[in-house]
Image (cartoon, rainbow, N blue to C red; front, side, top):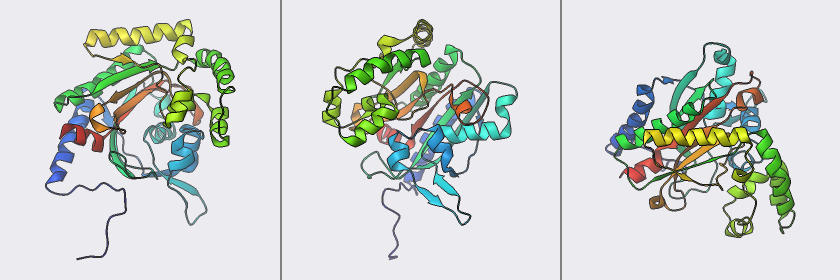
Length: 314
């Protein structure tokens, strides 16, 4: 027997279990293909700044979880911890954002985060994702959600729910930030948490520590500060979902773990999976392409975790 073993926290698939992995992955990809999305294949490592600028320095992904290394040329590179920032980099580099829009793509592959391995959380994990680039129509938000919903239905999944909210526009977040910072100033926070709040106070809603969740229980909610335009946008998204017969719950405390989101955000959650209950998540990120050096271009998408879906499916 070989003394070598796979690194801790890495998910592997070999017969006969690899057939289940392949089936679940391919059903989800097929849902995107049927909706007219095309393959985009990306490198597994990028310039580190793609993620520090794109994902956000205040996020746990960037501050704690990235596998970053220096190559022989002295360049800082990072194994991709998520897909969207890399897709947007590729869109800008290839000029797709300056061509015929919308651009609709899907991707699938391995991603990497330096986390403490536990059920549903791996250091190497697999995702299927889609991105719809170039339209700010609320109907696109609903389309993206419907593609994931169809993928789940094709697998016959049960015991999950769709949660949605709106993070508003710049006007909404600016108004909310004033009152949120006033509230946060009344809390007794450690220095690291204060630093995170200074960069992006919304991050405190995403803090999983019980004491922080209790402390934020009475914090002002962004959903109550939506501008008229943002409120109307969210109303239209919900109307489209109602027309499609997609059931959802509004969760005003959802902020997502990445900084690039605005307006509609969503998660599919299952109580069957315990602490790692989110099986798919996404939303709109209209400012990300511009943030990475492209021209202002709206976009919306999601990523779903194959390992967690396998647990829900089995």
